[in-house]
Image 1 (spheres, rainbow, N blue to C red):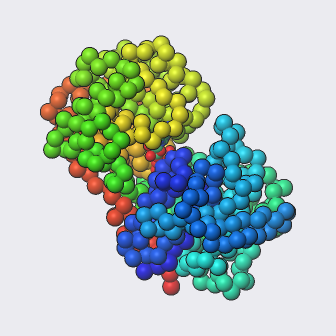
Image 2 (image 1 turned 30 degrees about the horizontal axis):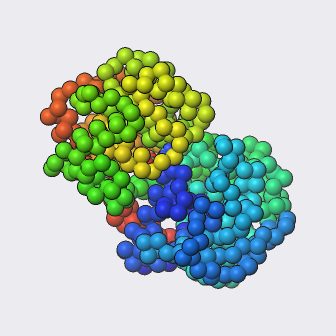
Image 3 (image 1 turned 90 degrees about the horizontal axis):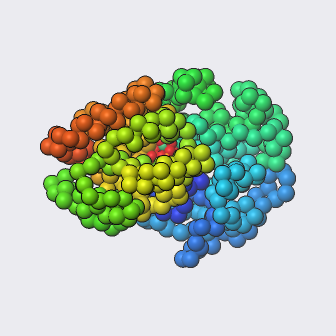
Length: 472
Ligand code: ADP
Ligand code: GLC
């Protein structure tokens, strides 16, 4: 069994903005169950309380060439997994994680460089792993420091590095002038290393220098090697295709299970769906929508309001949707344009639409339970967790067949469509609305989805095999 140190920018239950946090919260305990010795490095954002945390390292200096950063390292245990929290108040003691009100922090290049260097110091002094398992651009410099800055450092000899790509749409692009401030020299500013269209690209550095790379579904692993999905890195990914695999994420059924979920109005299972109808009524009441006809379909959306998620397809068909006998429930946060569009829609159609702008985990659970259908027409989707949760809640997914959505939703459990056009989406929603009218057949579709098993066990076994292949 291997000793692993994960590095990431978010993890449930400590801090979450999206599916990355679900993965970094669930994969380590699943790996620990298989006998791996796993720890996780995270920044200590102000929203992570230090109550019950132990300081394990006082004043660990991080020197990057510019001013030095003083960090303290704390540990907390969650589900038996140790988390090393990098405490550096000038960098992480802020309200936002990556941005403030949609504006990325101007020193993100420093914030995540410090995270990566601190992770290597933790690897040196506190938890010496065989494999550094890094997630996304925020952790990508670990590989660069390991293979470039520390290449002659005996501490790190034999240590391997795995990079998991959760989303090619976020790469960490910064100007060339940052290099001296993150402790890297200008020799790395080369097309085959960190340079990317006149910028420094952190994720590219991770892809170049990691020993192995994986993405979060097989479909996405194939897609990102094509120009349409590669965000400019498809050529590099093709060149590294021998080191690139796809491992579908799992779902944490301790958190997302209608049989036990404490956040929903009534529990239910495939055998007895009574609680789903109670949950539907409760959701409509909570959002002040009419409950006169519980046989009217409710479509749910829980999402970051980003272009990735297909909102440019939804927007043009909103008028047509309002002509259908349905109710729409939206929970989302992100692009101000879509926040405004859905708020206005709810204002214009108060009996049909409820919009909640913000981030609310409890409401996300109640929408998964109370809606009949879940809408996720993504432009691209590395894995997607919400549709996997929807399956378990008997909430039939309407998805665009891309990446992890294509790998998890077939016509026996949901409504996938291929063409990225508003018309294809509208046709598919209408097909779902018609199908909803045939109650026995609809319930069969729900039950087939509820029986699907995407637990972390399978994914953890696949990561174990990958780790084993990476080690001599
Ligand atoms: P992504 O990571 O691209 O946002 P995923 O489907 O992998 O997409 O994961 C999204 C996760 O974030 C799910 O757990 C979902 O419930 C949650 N989520 C997204 N938006 C919100 C929101 N506004 N409020 C609460 N939870 C949200
Ligand atoms: C990213 C992707 C999403 C994936 C999540 C966890 O946020 O957009 O598809 O499920 O990471 O891997």
